[in-house]
Length: 270
Image 1: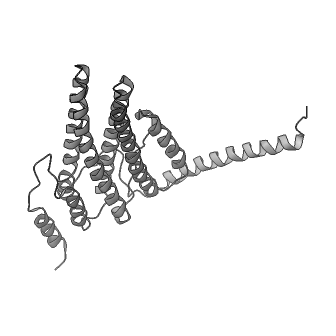
Image 2: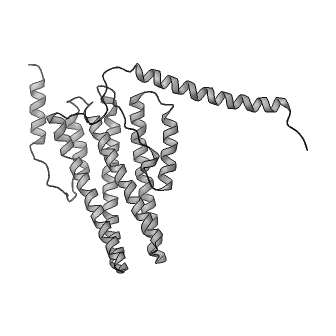
């Protein structure tokens, strides 16, 4: 049996010590830079929205909330039919829910893309929320968010951390939707109505609902930091995501653009 030489052992220890030093330095730098950030950044928690920003938020966010609520009700009905032994009706409800799921996914993806587009126009730093693994249930989401938590430790700028969070939500939306689609397809092809399949559907919806809520919270946080001149363009971007779709809620007032134009005309110097 060959024994390791002292040189090889010391070399391995150098790698370990180097990694530990890098981690500690990164942590200290992040703490230091965080303390020295400019005061012009959004405070933690839900910042109040002015009338113009509230108009943009209320014209879009309640629609997402209503669609998610209807999706949850539809899936709950499917579970009730499953419990009653009416599996054919249960899977029909799941298919109807899947159609709504994919529609909501496209709208939220459009929201995240629009936020990424307008993020460079923020007047001050947007403080991102912490997203932790323990809030998710599916293994794939837990693994993905855990990698994000590690990467986030090496990103010091709140603006870049917020951008990283938007990417996290976008990719997380794809992962959980692909899992839901794959579970439904495999179960229906194989005629599998085992408890494990229904548990997977329940877990997927939990994570999907969580991602949607985090996307809306990020949307609200970004709104507080955008200049008023950007709001009309953002509102039009979001309106295009809902155009041609059956609304879960009544459409906002048609004079929205007129209100924005009036606010901008008062803001311009003569």
